[in-house]
Length: 104
Image (cartoon, rainbow, N blue to C red; front, side, top):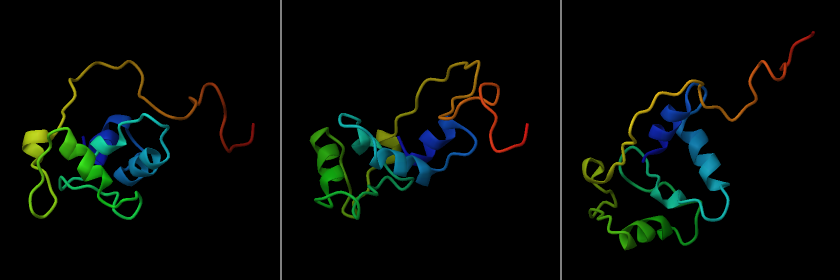
């Protein structure tokens, strides 16, 4: 998946960059290395040591990268099955359960 795909699934208020920040601070065991940027490349070069760790992990799983360190998203992109969701997913409490920032 790409950071943009995840942001779109989460809904309004989420951006690919936000997803990247969340993935960077995710708990041990989260498959963070499976999330790529929209060009099919890794975006962890300045964040993770060694700089090519994400690409090496993906290559161990069978993902092939080109000479310019990109994979073919048409081949490797995961597209989740659609489902009907009764309530929009959010990381925040609903407005009904708590009031935010206003006077009562």
